[in-house]
Image 1: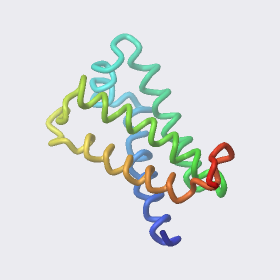
Image 2 (image 1 turned 60 degrees about the vertical axis):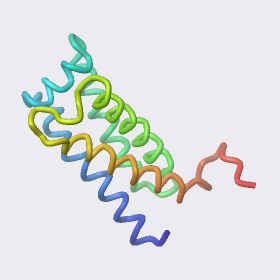
Image 3 (image 1 turned 120 degrees about the horizontal axis):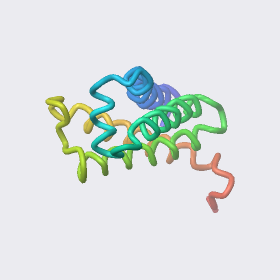
Image 4 (image 1 turned 45 degrees about the vertical axis):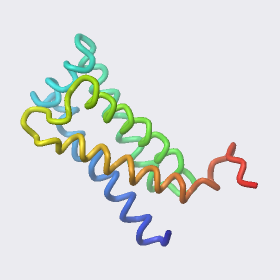
Length: 128
């Protein structure tokens, strides 16, 4: 995987995660409704904490020798998002035609590819 393709993967994943932060951090009605379905009375805590983790993951994707951390965190976040869509939210939320669900899948795929490319950065990875 060449540097240009890696950069595209990082940008796609980061842009998708970062563009949702405005909605999470400003308590936009769509975001509040989505996280209320997931977390009930803990909606605000889960929404803000998720946003903070997505911000950290996005930054780590661009830190040399820490890409694997950003990718691993992104994989965890997007796996949770996809699982939430499948089990709680539904594929389509608020008449979005599945855009959030598809965005989570695209982000997950980018993160998996980045983790694979940067696996030798992982200190506990046995690549012998």
